[in-house]
Length: 247
Ligand code: SAM
Image (cartoon, rainbow, N blue to C red; front, side, top):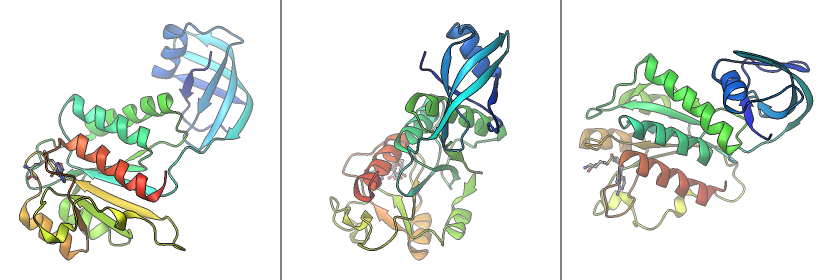
């Protein structure tokens, strides 16, 4: 059995315990047995091989038999600030962001935002992060940040060296050459540091929001002549940054 299970809190010795949905997965879905070997991760970057020692209805005890560092993170830190789409598309966005190696998703409140993520929505997103990490092999959890307004995000992001927003304005000279994403590359000799990329709501960023971003030295990026849905724009933009900055 090579299934991956998430352990919380972190593993500190040679014992681990699964509870809740993780225990349910092993006991009732995978029909685990004492002696089975599984892979555990606890968000610390380590990966553990563990042997099932005892199974109860809603709890599993395991003995850790090996541990090793398995770093599957991007070579730089990528934050996506996204005016969240609704329903299933939100889950899709979180899954793809985890698979692509995004370090943090910040739910964005803009003038035209529709989805207003509350505490419950943030918790659901955090659970999707675990599910996607189990599937794709990441050993660090993508962070779901506190929701931010556009003005707060601009004010809080000054320290991040590269700040971009997706904005479909092909004829706007400030967007540069449409197909030219060379500026995303890391200049020779520079560390690969951090990038923040913002994606607007279905109604788009307002011109005031775009002007405020430019004022704060954000660069607008055009992703082609078609209007992409929020989650598509987010994955395309993350992929472009990875392609140019290394993954
Ligand atoms: N009519 C809206 C507009 O003009 O901005 C379209 C909004 S689109 C459904 C949602 C978000 O995805 C946009 O705010 C933008 O961040 C991003 N987006 C979608 N298509 C894009 C494109 N071709 N170029 C750049 N950004 C795009």
